[in-house]
Image (tube, rainbow, N blue to C red; front, side, top):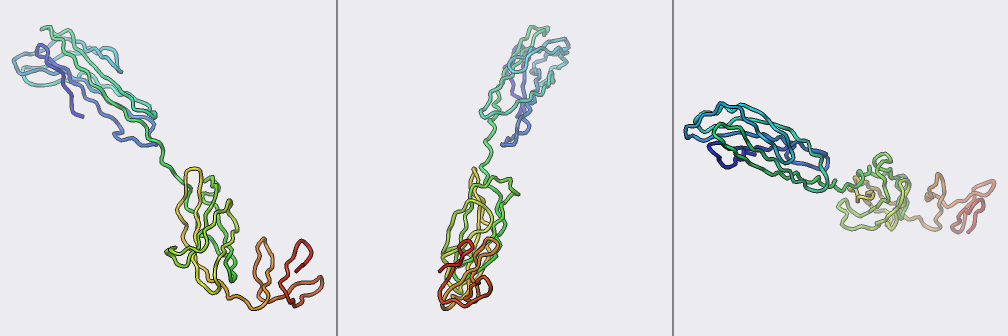
Length: 269
């Protein structure tokens, strides 16, 4: 800011200039430095000064500064004191005051001046959700949906609370056929799909601060619905539709006349 001048007193006046660094604070700013400069000034009425004087500081900077006033009979100023005050930021604005008065002038002048400054509050940090997850990987497809593998974003540091999967009939996601919340990364099921149809799917993650953006969408095309019975196999934690309708007895694969499933070690209808 420009120098703020107090009133003339017997041909002398006090000026104060305050600058703040950094001028603008963010949630990452922990402190600012106020540089306070104080001046003595005169008028142009023919008064010369060449005497020892004292500036007394008040407000948030105190003490005294002895100096020799060498101003001549023209409008002018002389820097008397410069000080840097470091102010730690808090969640509230802080008012600071800086004053000065001069004594010891041979003509009895005692000018003074005071100037206030408001240190802004430290802004709250922005609300930040987790990083955007990578695009899911399609690991299996059948006639009614697909299985995806979802990887936790941020290498496990994002404190994800839940995920959301969306699957739609176009990359614009204007018609969504499956919208599912799930608690953990890993293998998830996409459902509600029609046979021999192309779909686009994407995921996002949420932590205590909010949602991430959606991942890049990936596409898959469902299989044709098989005629007759439908048979699934379970391997690596995933049920997959078998190409042919067979099941395994203890010694051999046999054709089946109805869809069977395996419960524990036993196959049942």
